[in-house]
Image (cartoon, rainbow, N blue to C red; front, side):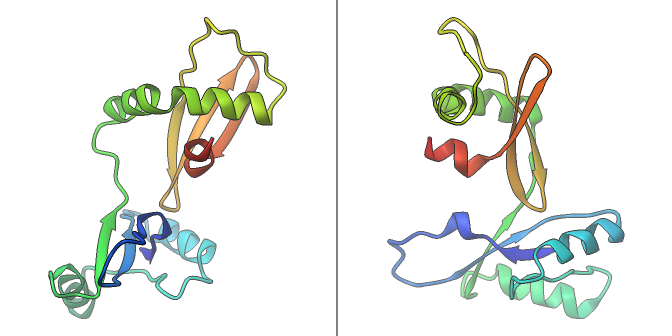
Amino acid sequence: MSQTYIRAFDHCDEIYKTDILVTDYDDPGLAKIHLNAVAHDKYAAIIDLTKEKHRKKIREMLEPSSRYVVYWSIVKDVKEMEMRLNNRYSENMRRYIIKNTGWRIGADETIRPSFQVTFGELYIILKRSTQTLRVRFDEIEKS
């Protein structure tokens, strides 16, 4: 499944290339659901690597001279990702919670988020007691 990857845009690039995010699916039905969710995106497409035409297009997109930069939506190591999120964004999460919720977070309380990737987008899952908050990563990043 391919789609435009807006988060990758670099305003300083001298040569404009289209950033594409590719997400793997073992289940074609899930790929179709993803496609429907981003149907407005002109680069949204299901890529079937059993088809030579699709394999050829992916190879072209990966060439250095291509007008595309391809990103792969994958988390190699869940524990490492959680550690990186905790180390780098714990204060951002704390600010987000204070600004956008009624949760009272003590200075000595540690925020331990989990995450999920949905349709190529990273979401942070924050839990406190019986409450759960699911927030797009870019919202946390901006806080």
